[in-house]
Amino acid sequence: MDKTRILVTGGCGFIGSNFIRYMLSKYPYIIINFDKLTYAGNLENLKDVESDSRYTFVRGDIASKADLASVFEQGIDVIINFAAESHVDRSILDPDTFIRTNINGTFNLLEEARKREVKRFIQISTDEVYGSLGKEGKFTESTPLSPNSPYSASKTAADMLAMAYHKTYGTPVLITRCSNNYGPYQFPEKLIPLIITNALEDKELPVYGDGMNVRDWIHVIDHAVAIDAVLHKGVLGNVYNIGGENERTNIEIVKLILSILGKPESLIKYVTDRPGHDRRYAIDSSRIKRELTYSVTTDFRKGMEDTVKWYLDNRGWWERIKSGAYLEYYDLMYKNR
Ligand code: NAD
Ligand code: DAU
Image 1 (cartoon, protein in one colour):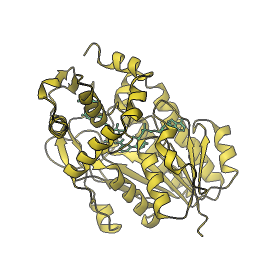
Image 2: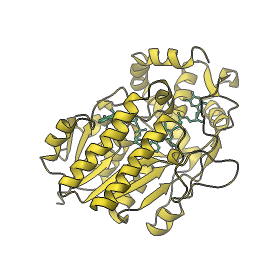
Image 3: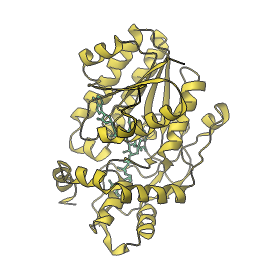
């Protein structure tokens, strides 16, 4: 059996938990999930794999060198860094933790990788590092980095550190930059789960600005498959864009959810725009498709129907989240918009 030890940071969040489940179902690897359990981290997300002997959970903070040292002493072959503060609106309200986790935390991981014999370091980045597009064009891997929010600036800094470690120390870095994910276990602060769960509660559906901002939506499992391809076939030092080839305006997404749920459009409320709101993201993923024979397989309509069904079937999961500290955040975020 292959005893490769993979450190997945941030594995209790949305994408990390889906990725871990996918990897355990496909490979014999040992997975160490290292997560601080912030508001976004939830042990429930991986309850079904807890008893798998190849899976271990370690509570820890990537911004703490001491927490990291103890996990690295056990031996790590591969690092996949999902851990991050991930929500743009929160970064506008309070950027501090974004700098600490996304920049200092990535730096600490790179230092561990430099000191030890790590074979691969995959930095899970985002298309937001490229900034915003007008009506035409797509982000390629050589599009200049031009982030607009504290969140995307912190992710950009992390990418640059990672690339500098590769060039200076030969750290075996690969970077992925994916577009907007959707699917099960996404925290209900993000557009799709927020709209689904608010609609299920017959609450207002806040749409920022004119609702015409465009995102390129990809199912979280298509993202996991892409990371799998980068892990096994990616060339060290390369960046790989990952996109869904699926551009949609926000209002189109909201109306699609309402039609799947059979809820009225009168729930929609246009609210004050997000400051510095990026207008359009679109990804050119031709490199990963061509060089790593990757392709997206989830049909968007089907993926959205399955996602809505997941939130219907897992009401307890999101009701517990929405009845806790989330309420204060929601008030702060939406009261005066
Ligand atoms: P998420 O907010 O759902 O989960 C983040 C996880 O990281 C949580 O489990 C949290 O507890 C953990 N974490 C936060 N700070 C930590 C720290 N200091 N130490 C250890 N763990 C910590 O985020 P997500 O949507 O799953 O995103 C995961 C990664 O993918 C992020 O790096 C994000 O930038 C990137 N990304 C997200 C998307 C998207 O659409 N959600 C798209 C492209 C890239
Ligand atoms: O593109 C990848 C990025 O996608 C990731 O790097 C981020 O971690 C992830 O959060 C996501 O960022 P966005 O800001 O694009 O996602 P969010 O779901 O917050 O918003 C999607 C769009 O919907 C955006 O144009 C803002 C809008 N929006 C969002 C919320 C929460 C609304 O109109 N109303 C809302 O209530």
